[in-house]
Amino acid sequence: MNNDKISTMADVARKIGVSPMTVSRAFKPGSPVNKETRDAILKAAEELGYVFHATASNLRSQKTDFIAVTIPSINNANFADTVGGLSDVLNARGFQILLGYTNYDMDEEERLIEGLLRRKPQAVVVTGSKHTSRARKLLENAGVPVIETWDVPADPIGYFVGFSNADAVRGMVDHFVAAGYRRIAFVGGETSRDARGSDRRLGFIQALHDHGLDASRLIDAGAPPISMREGANAMARLLHQYPDTDAVICVSDLSAFGALTECQRLGVQVPGRIAIGGFGDYEIGGISVPSLTTINVGARQIGEQTGRLVLDLLDGRCTNHITITPELVVRDSSD
Image (cartoon, rainbow, N blue to C red; front, side, top):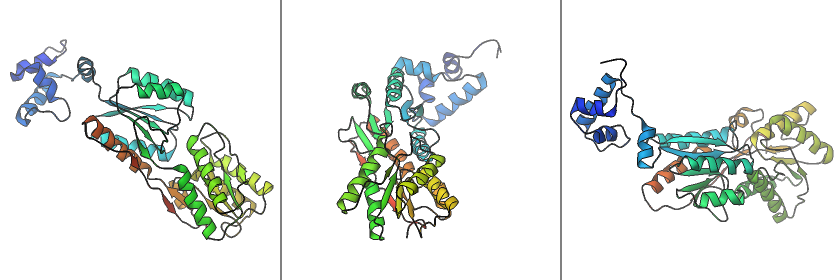
């Protein structure tokens, strides 16, 4: 072989005695080419140093091999698990993820959606159901399956795989009330940048009202994503403003761990003096001392279910919305 010559699909086809179209099909996932012919093509391609140009093939067919995905945070273990589950399902069919990071900014999400749609993805997966009006219009006119995740939209754009953040927190409130707590506070969620956090805060307020309890113990912990340090600072403010508080529910496990650490620094016993609950079932909540009561939303399950839904939609199978049921995980930080 002349090392100065770049091998082409036609070279592989001539070597095997098949058409260039057969060579192209042999390189694609789920190839209809029989195994003997495909093996011969792949062997010839290796000998010739030919690399299949998937991008050029996709341009000719007006199809790509990627799914566009937006997430609000790249350092959040829950969202990482969701993307991991989604990727595993899609990779098995030869699809790749093109990931966009919104940083909890709906305007940034709008820009990302516009840019991602220019690349003609096979489907679009977005986190949450709150979008700018223009982003929503872009998704409605995308011409490909659209799946909203991590929420139960009142008016879905296409399909969703998610859960009610408000209902999940209501379940934790019910647990605390049943355990005898009455002066319960909430840390985080008071921001337009995090619709899911705001829904959790709203669920907390509604649940306390349903129990006939005061729902005014609300502490803002800052803009998302809320860190452990911000959780600690919020707990310090809570104990100063409402010193008789006997339980607190935090918008995430990270903020709950910060709150727990602040209690330990101040000599406030958990759960003897105050109970703490988090959200998300992060690894840190399971190994902290005491371990954190939390809510497991099935982050990886959301990704896997979304991946299967995408494939079903692309295969033309009729599907339904998928509602995930979060699990209350009771640990040592509450009685």
